[in-house]
Length: 124
Image (cartoon, rainbow, N blue to C red; front, side, top):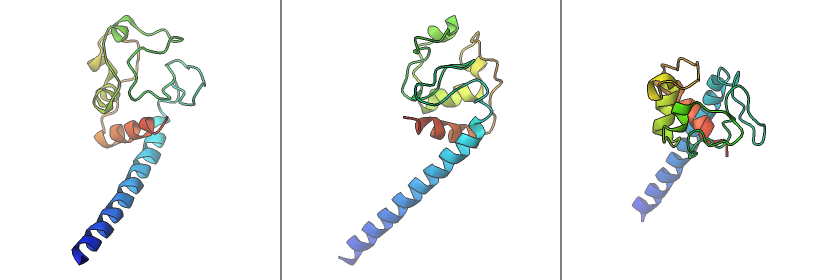
């Protein structure tokens, strides 16, 4: 019985730690995202900026917003935005989809990339 109680307490403690860690990633990602906010909006229904609105981007197909003019290469990429594809895109859009019209050179820090993905994933 003591083992079961200990295991339950340990599991609850770890889940609290995980959610606190995730919240920290989201907050740090929001701060890093400020350099993206020059072109991208993230509020539901806010429309687009120079780039498409990224609210709800995780799980969405690339070039899927009907009111944004995407490049031909991005339209034909077949990408669905998940953690892996977003990580590659944020690291270097031109490397993932050559010929796309996003001029951003990318972020080299893997931690910052993951933080931005956590932030974008929180926008639902």
